[in-house]
Image 1 (spheres, one colour):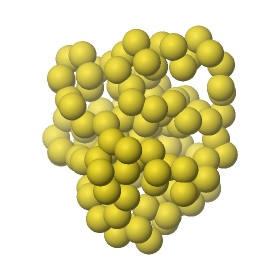
Image 2: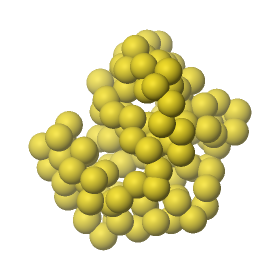
Image 3: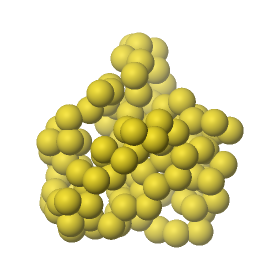
Length: 122
């Protein structure tokens, strides 16, 4: 499966990407919202994971553009250190499939991916 992951925390990005690659996925990573938008407009993915607080565009901004303007049906997970209810509600209203709080256990992330794609590995 081809997975897109936007995360500005380099340690978190490496940890999650490594876990996904170990499970057989192809992973494309970027570290800001501007690069994320450019990549998401030019390539297609089977799954999208977005950090909530990215430079330039937030994960919610990107999800809104993807779901409402670009009409993507690709499953989207938002990852955030903030578990605030209003952010979770906003994400749901936009059409985000899952909102998970960090630190994230790789097994939980893979389980959520499987829920939306029917597979947890490549």
